[in-house]
Amino acid sequence: MSKKIAVLPGDGIGVEIVAEAVKLLEALQRDFGLKVELEQALVGGCAYDDSGSPLPESTLSLARAADAVLLGAVGGYQWESLPIAKRPEKGLLGLRSELGLFANLRPAILYPQLASASTLKPEIVSGLDMMIVRELTGGIYFGQPRGVRILDNGERQGFNTLVYSESEVRRIAHVAFDIAAKRNHRVCSVDKANVLECTEMWREVMIEEGKKRPDIELTHMYVDNASMQLVRNPKQFDVMVTTNMFGDILSDTAAMLTGSIGMLPSASLDANNKGMYEPIHGSAPDIAGKNIANPLATLLSVAMMLRYSLNEAAMADRIETAVVKVLDSGLRTADIAGAGCQVVGTRAMGDAVVAALA
Ligand code: NAD
Image (cartoon, rainbow, N blue to C red):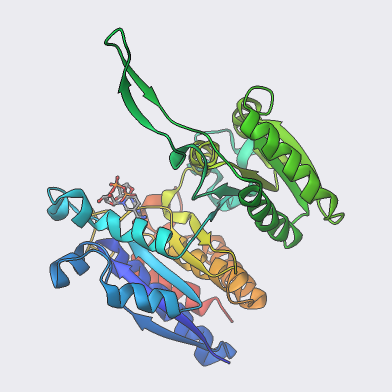
């Protein structure tokens, strides 16, 4: 039975990079028997211009009915002065919360061909391939009570609440273990169990769930050490699972190890592995419409979608191998260009990946 993909290009370079993703999916349909149906809708600034809402009901219904959502990026200078509720980013946040996407998956992959793009020494990062699984809908970003109050002495006091229920920890543990089972079977859970009771419980629940998964080697690390280890020896990690705030910070560090924002895909999953897939970068209004954006993060997001939501691991492998072949051939978009490489535009890079699928 054919699976439904909601395709939401969004704004800026989102339109250009998602066009390459659609080209790739159509090639997989035509030449390799992939059974998917694609339907496009507006989200972000373009949706606001069209209907007055960054997340129209029709887009939300399409996303709810789909097996997976492919998103480009949202945002742009022309919408920056709108009230917050109408801004393009609200469309993205609305999709995440309405679809219950509690697990954020951010791979940090550094292709050896691009090792010189990192700020770290090539021998530290070359061949890096790790996955950060961040809890996305709980923890201190959502805990109540929160706010700023006035104390008796007139001083202001800001406060937030770090709170996790067992079930929230168990479900993110399952996501991390299932992903590790498709990789190298190792999970490192990052917490601050020596100081924070909430994450002491996080660790206990991880251990309980880990006992049910003898196929997975589970280890634990305090967040301060994890931040150090990420820059000291990042290749020691396979899958890292952590709370919302720790994951927010550590995933940006991990992304920067690779030095190439145009190369990194991401996924946000719900309890049934339905997901939204998008490059980690934004709509890059500074280069929009110039045919110079790197489409590879989006094409690699398609690979993640095939692997995690559509159960098409062989198709995902095919895309990832094609990207490696294209990098081996020396083709680069401007953002990852280096000495001796041939610089090509967005469409030519998309064509090259399609040609390398065979
Ligand atoms: P950005 O990621 O759009 O761009 C940062 C820099 O990276 C820019 O110089 C841009 O040209 C470059 N860049 C980004 N993607 C690239 C690609 N694929 N190929 C080549 N170069 C690339 O971040 P920003 O400039 O801070 O934000 C621009 C807009 O995007 C804002 O409106 C912001 O709110 C929005 N945004 C959206 C998302 C999202 O949709 N998920 C994420 C971040 C920012």
